[in-house]
Length: 82
Image 1 (cartoon, rainbow, N blue to C red):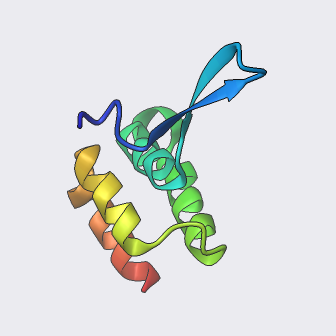
Image 2 (cartoon, one colour):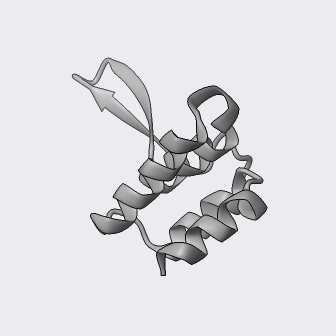
């Protein structure tokens, strides 16, 4: 599965419009991937909030980080949460 397909679910609205929706872990990994555009502070806040609200597990985060090729970037921030 490519990183474009990983973590993406297609939802149907009124049986007519198909909308791709990303899961929480993929969204966080993408925020780290595009941290130069959205800002590292945004990526860190997303990570912290999702972890505190128990919307994602470390395993899900790690798998998304590997798929999006940001595991080395996310590792120290993920370690600081535990």
